[in-house]
Image (cartoon, rainbow, N blue to C red; front, top):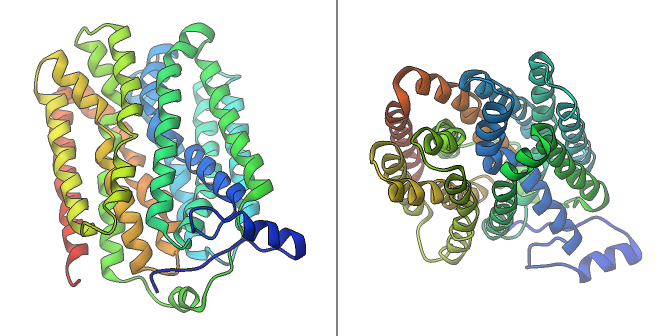
Length: 398
């Protein structure tokens, strides 16, 4: 039940070509894997781009206060949640390629619209529109990944690709804003979505699923699966409360723009580590233990950033701020694939990731205005502890 074989549909020469091009023993052609990896980056754009999206662009360039800027990000994430919650239970019965390509296409149009307006009401609507499209596409991407032969490894490859993507976005985002305005950053985001839409239209895999997953799709999700999904939602809320404001923490402490930009770029390089490490440890470490260890590291990093003074502490903490999330999510993805062969829980990845993230930015911005960055850090740590409790419950019974 753990290994679910999938392959692109095709006939004659097309099927033979797809078979010959299977890569990494995941049952997909190289072109299909490229479509999934790029789709993962486009759909998870907020995960790597929030510091420049919210901090440098919406607050820094558009001159919105943290609460209004956070609300825009929250609307984008809300759109992803709505799409994923609606489509995930129907995964396997809806046209995945069409929804992936169409969803990314809608996301591209939304960002191109944002590149042409500074009206706050229009920005609200376009952020929601972009989130709906991205969530639709990402649901299909993650559900399809979950039905691969080795979902843990494929998701680790996706995480590594996202880390490389993050280096580019975090390293160039502030420079793009400085050189060509905040609207130009939204043009870049739109181009990313457009490329993902094109690849999905041309190469998104169509999976034939074994009877095991079809049988699982008829049953209810187990309490362990629900505990893992809820825990991931809480953990992502904790992450999204702090991540959009790490750039502002450095600036408000008086650190130079050059230093803060360098630290943000270092996030991408540090993110090259956790997913390969998770892939290496797949068969060596119990997934539940790895997940809880990642939470502990996350708590330590957030405490260092928000409670301890010193430029060195800030720089090291910020550089590592997203590595526990990537490590934990890789193990959780593989574990959920084993516990739920239907792929429905993994198709709901955008919902479980974004439902917590939906209120995170605006809640984080409100905390910053009310009690400062120190209070924000305490709130994040409390949520991380709640997530650890859910993951502990998930690990019971095995």
